[in-house]
Length: 278
Length: 278
Image (tube, rainbow over the protein chains, first blue to last red):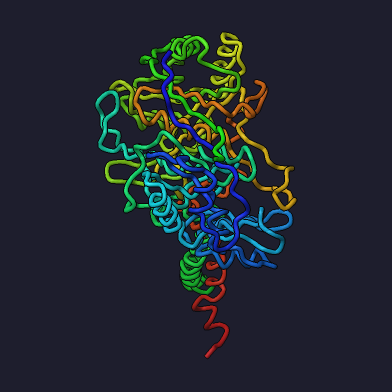
């Protein structure tokens, strides 16, 4: 028998519908109960309840306008019957379909925007929960995101505090003594994904506790989930393929036209006649 | 107290270095021990040991050549000091850096290729483990992969059998009774990510047991992890931004040159003189 204790993901139930101004620290503590949190626990909190507590529910007769308002940069778009899918970089720096604007699980005529600064939201939660419980925990705020090249969605970390979002293996060596240069596990995203496996099983479960990853729990001055975002200038996929192709085509056309015009002008009909009279 | 039982990820230790021809069913069963597997368990197995058992370790004086051989289509590439990063679609249909060719944790002068057909490998494992134990389990074969827009890597499912890789919520409704049209959680990838949280904690832990997701365990005739791959023709990021831009530029240049030439030819110097003699 060589099965060793690993990681447990526990669901937290009993958190009612959140309204603007609700104190998530109080509500989470009430739900987990006295002694419900232990040193080294990481709380994965769905961004939905953070947004709702922060009053990020806005009236939106036009969901498309809300997406436009949250958009910093359109990365790609594609028409489908009945609409347009827009993959954009949003104000939080996240590349997501519909800018992370969510119109499911919100009252009719409203949409839910992501927290203004998810790392700050995570920090506030983490500080409050640590102060109230006296235990050293970490917080990850998760949201659902599509991916390039893969079907379906996974949850990713959009905010984090008190937890390392990378398990930095650089500087360590493999089993043959060679340095592991490349591997940088994005454990923040893996924690969000693991939590979704539990949260997704039941509706109305916006918080999960991940127990067994105490080595990732850290001080509050860490980098946060923003560090999981690759800046566009370092991304090989900063622009959709069709958009990049169209931009290149337009640039190339202008350049080709100028070159072609010059050449054609020089070789115009009379010029040719001049060059070979009779 | 409203913490509910969720999902447990258990590490399996005691699996020694794998050699070509090793029987993974036997080795895994020996490691987990009698009664170590229960109905509804999902085994996450790192592709490394599957590749090794299948003899996919090849001598490679030139790692670059091995990558080229595994490549079906170059998606993007970028030079860095000392080499070139190539993101490619490999023979398995996966878009990955270096085609999934791994030169860490292999003997010097060799590289590890991915299993030829990871879904088939998962199926063989699943059939063998179910037959030997009499319990209904699922198998996910995982590998580490980079992502567009996100730093670091997560584990994803590259093979699966006896387990649903999507938790299809389409057709269900949200809390307000509206259909959830879009959400299609890629639970296969989330399982691989959750397992990596445990496997990554300790070296030499190539297998993890995910317990508590029995609702995802399924018959053997399911779609497999191949269904997690979005075909290039449906992908907005099927080609790197720089590559798409260069291709567009070249097309546009040719077209612009032709148009410019025709226009310049018509407006050539003598043509202009002819049009306004004296």
